[in-house]
Image (tube, rainbow, N blue to C red):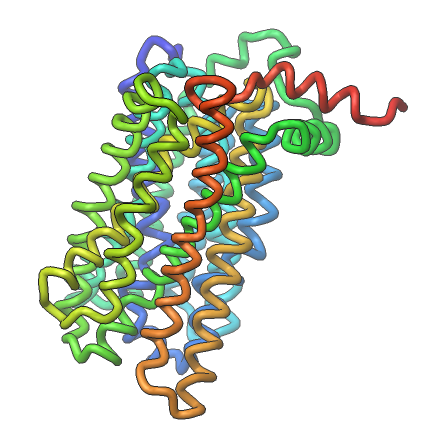
Length: 434
């Protein structure tokens, strides 16, 4: 199948796979109250499982699989990853201890690390720069849909059949999908070897050289990473609302799921499409649009922590927290992809995902869990409220990065993207000759 001849079908296939990936990744959140009670997990252990445990595998493998995707068949890299994470999702439904769950989730992360770098590389090739942000935004609709469906699945199917059966069923579905993806041919296999990435070590040296030589990457990547602290807040959302706001677990699980589906999806679609349009018409390009998003949504997210439960301001803040990080995906990755040569697009995506999972997800979740335990033990009232307020403020800290990128974009190009081949050449000049 020639990928460029069927862009819509390719996008739909990758989106469906991405939805399943985030269902499998986030299904633990929907069962957090039941699972922590049954396995006897503390907040810190729970934070480790949804954060650091995941990153121990994902952070390493995202870079490794990114270099594989730049060098070999991207569709087969995705199929192999899907098979691994599906088998291990099924295995997660049979665990009986903290250690067993850690082992299963490590391997789920190993498989899922293959998807985003390879998929972004395919979409960046299939869609032109004029529509790239829109296509990427639609692909990343998989995050809110996956997160939302994981909560809805936990509150419906899971409430009837239990969390173990839910994990088993998801594993079977993914394994069947992996077989189909394995037969999807990556048309890049017909291209010259010069269009492919270098072997692992050489590819990493070249990518790091481009990052050092490209100011846009030095601003876009940190800002994008900081924005993901919003997901640390999401990891503890159900626990916070149940324990400190007194809301019924099943009821709020469905509400969180619905908000993630509606406003996360809206964020991905609007962020991608509006970001492309904004970049063509206004100074600062994609970066100005990203700064505007943070400036509008940030105050609502802060208000959410203190507004009366059920009030309009409460729901506005919840919706803003679901909308903002997803709205940044299309424009942020469009800037990053437009700042590197085509042969390293999957690798730079893998590196970005590694940084996100290392600093925002792993460290963010662990610190949030450990700090909330410590505050609770010292008698602080509503410890999760204060901890999650901190994650909101760190999310808003992405604003200076995007403003600086917008100022640079206004002086330089109109769309905030560097000249990738020029940056690559500069990085090669900086490297010592062997």
